Image (cartoon, rainbow, N blue to C red; front, top):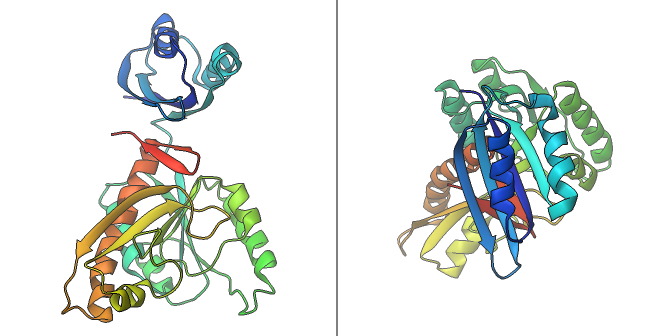
Length: 286
């Protein structure tokens, strides 16, 4: 079943749901999913709607244009239209740790993620063997310790992303800060996994920070990357309980297991087009 997916948000007004569903039904569309949410604090409306394309009277390449003409200015709608039969193209960025990379690739091979992975990018050679196991091209750019060549490296990386028609990027423990220009090319399309329950313990060695603080839970956070470090819209979080018997090393092991799960959940929601971002927060539909 090929479907179109409409994600939108706008200032809340009466009649929006009626108007949009009428647009679908008037053009012989059969709605198979509809979820909506109104933020009563900001008076803002959010909606995800999916309908069958079979028999729909508007050509798929014209749907976004027609919808925008009818409703974008009228309701102040910010919207995107996606199609279920188009596989998103995902690039994975890694450094030296393999646990998140292996988990994503295993789920991909098992058919859990409806995605294409044209490349893996790294700042080290260490994980080339993993890419070779899964027969995925592996590219390495080394950033100098003083970051003197970072702009040059990211220009080359962005050129590769454009050449391979990459839709979004997953930082699977990529231990390198992404520049503002690169981030601007993929707004809310770069997903990071942070080995901490943000906003606590940002930066390096969060498990050591957690150990020193004597916390009773440690967590992991997946979020969209923005120019402000580790402060983008949060997609998914989870925690695991610990005790006084844990060491920084055992905390790190528990955290790695959690990181894999949290990152895969975030990527899955992104692939399913179930996330809307607004004011540095996410609305995630079920």
